[in-house]
Every structure is written in structure tokens, then in C-alpha cells.
Amino acid sequence: MAKPTRTPGWSQSAAFRAIGRAAITAWNLKRATLPTCTAKAKRTGEQCRQLPMTNGKCRFHGGATPRGDKFHVTSLPSAKGPDGGEKKLQAKLRQVRRDQKRREARLAAMTPAERERHDAWHKARQPGPAAPRAEKRRQRAMAKEIRQAAALPEVFSPEAAELQRKIDRLEALLAASSIDTADIDIFQ
Image 1: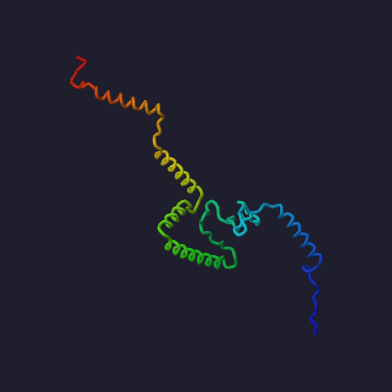
Image 2: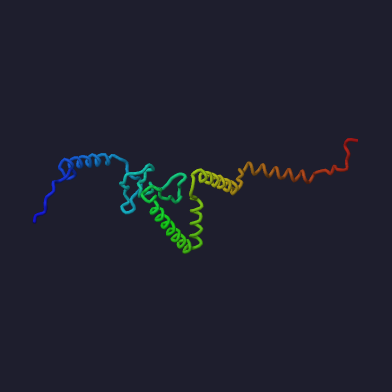
């Protein structure tokens, strides 16, 4: 027995295909003029061709990394969804625990020099709000300038060195020729 044929619906009509073709052609023309991700592709070394997010990088090259107060802070899924986001939350928590175990294993396998570099890297990149991190950066820069200024040797020009020698000689003469006037009363 022959299978009954169905009449094609709107989505299979020639008019629908023409509309779709026109829309994708217009999008491809527009997309060619849009900016692209500023990162270089790892495999080819050429510029990435993905559409960028607000920071100029695509979601694959750091565009989705949280900024500001969410910097390097674990973000949990929202409670939107049929089960209140419980499945996503549990999956995220499992991922966090897995990452923590991997991190601990990696730290245990590090040499002392590697661990020192790792700790210094993490100390310079504390998670959380931007303002305290900016203040710490400013304080570190000021401390570095002070250390550098204190470590500089005193550089004298030849004239300044000659003046210092004269001052030292005159101070030595003054100390040698000081008259003991403690027992002389000059106001009698």
C-alpha cells in the first residue's frame, strides 16, 4: 500500500526558502563589516573571526570572563528554570569540587620554586571587587618606588664631593680647636 503524501507546510514552501535565503544573504553581507575578535587563533596564528563581546574578545578568548566585582569569583547559575536551577547548581558544585581536587594535586606536585611563583601570581591576582585590588596595586607601586629610591647610591658630582671634603676638614678643625669654656665665666 502506498504511503499517503502530505502537502508541504509553510516551512517547506518556495516562498519560505526565498525569505530565508534573502535573510541569510543580508546577514552575511552585514557580518563582513562587523568587527571581529582581537585574539590570535592558537592553531593558525591568524586573527580570530568570531564576533566579539564588549571587551573586544569573543567568548572563546576571554570575552565571557567576569569583570569588576566578579573578577575570578566562582559564579553560580541563576535559579531560573523548571527546577529552580537545582540541577545546574549541583553540576556547578560538582565541577568546583573536581577543580579543587585537581588544583590540590597540581600544587602537591610542584617544586618549591614553582610553588613560590604560583603563590606570587595568585597574590597579585586576588579575586573580588576592583577597588581594593587597585588600591593594593597602587600601594605596591609606591613601595617599589621607595625601595628603589633607598637602594640608589648617593651620587656626588666632583664639585659636591670637594665641598663635602672641605666641610669635613673644617668640622675636624673645629672639633680639634674647641676651647673648653665650661669654667670661664665671661659675665663677671
